[in-house]
Length: 53
Image 1 (cartoon, rainbow, N blue to C red):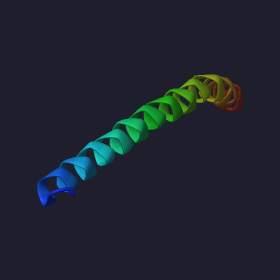
Image 2 (cartoon, rainbow, N blue to C red):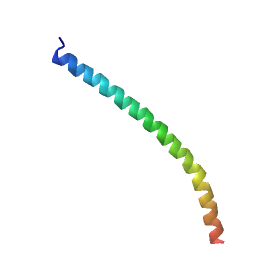
Image 3 (tube, one colour):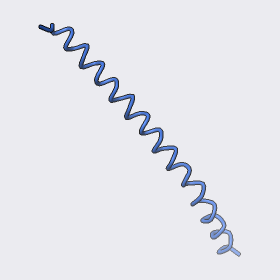
């Protein structure tokens, strides 16, 4: 039989794993998004400079 304290500790451990997984996933997605920004912004800036001429 488990005590309420043991159940609470199990919940906390499980939740902390979920949070750390989500943070890692978020960081990976953020890095992928940031990588696309540099490849999309440079051509856009070049086009804007050409339009001004």
